[in-house]
Image (cartoon, helix red, strand yellow):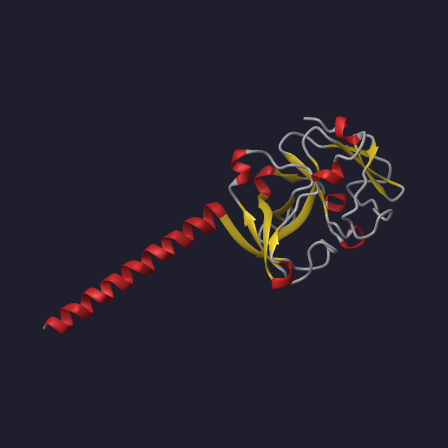
Amino acid sequence: MFLLRNLWLFFLDFLETIVVSLAIFAVVYIFLFQPHQVDGRSMEPNFHNAEYILTDKISYRIHAPNRGDVVVFHSPQDERVDFIKRIIGTPGDVVMVKAGYAYLNGTKLSEAYINDPGQVLPGKYMRDGAEVLVPPGQYLVMGDNRLHSSDSREWGLVTAAEIVGRAFFRYWPIPVFGTVPTAEAELTIGSVKGAMAK
């Protein structure tokens, strides 16, 4: 009888540990961080196919997304699919693609992080030389691999509600283990800095 009672108490303790662990995992997954796998080449050379990242889901509840942030968001074409891209334009910005380069508020961007400098092509939404004003609550995003990215140039802007969060940590494979840097510095070089002041 004593042995059965001890086994029962052990089982209850074990079950309680499992339930508490699952509850903590659920809270973290739903409200704080979510794992994602990079699928495709659109963010090369900075993110590669099959890399695993953690997405910070809480920061944007405290402050708005920033230029240069790498974000995960629901595809405007199919909300069941998540995309990863870099924010180029925030509300109030004027973005243009012209002669192979992206322009922000009238200044050509110096984007050292992209795969093909001088090869930024227009799309169905962003025509060559046509300015796009980013309205409140929306963001203009592009992949770092501009020749192989379906992004705002093709299908338009991303709403704040579609953004899942900011990619902030890579955990697989081991050689890229670490935090994800922002490109704010590259997006605020020289005279662009004053033009982008919020």
